[in-house]
Length: 216
Image 1 (cartoon, helix red, strand yellow):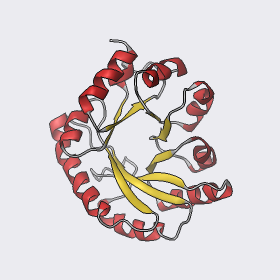
Image 2: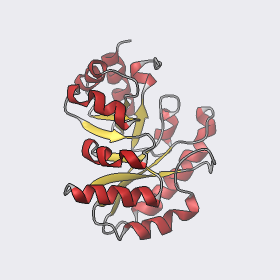
Image 3: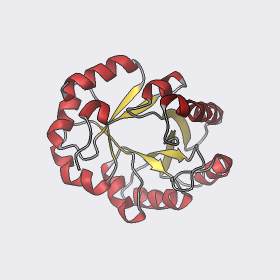
Image 4: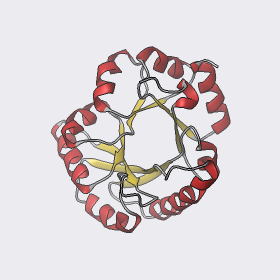
């Protein structure tokens, strides 16, 4: 099927859950096809790639979903409505400073290393509470959600991790105050977003399910 047909199919299937069209390696025209078909949020993995094509992309909500390096924070704050991949206190500090410099309160999601995998970025479950306490001291950060990338496996194998994320989400959502206003749980990608929705995702990130396999 075409990009617009795929977008409409996914949107119909997920109902009230928010769709992030993942646009890594996708050119602006194909991104615009997804937006015209009803996608309202796009998710980019790399700041530089987005910078090269953003002027051609139709109006939409723009999320950074890939790992953010410190030397790209200034541009990320300029380009993205939400940074989903906040994975360290150092990054929070950098984002806060760059946002303050341009008079912006940057919305972010905290990335959780739900599978406790050493090769992956994200906060450990046992440090989230101390991280939230630290974030209260920053004026230009607003935490709007949680995000995770579970260990690789079948959709059913990821279910346990999605369930753990939902429990954390429910716990943190009930303790919102100040610049912590957690409303979104971003989990599930093309291969497992259906299971993620069953386990409580409010937002899914779909790339190949819309644009087909990536071409590098």
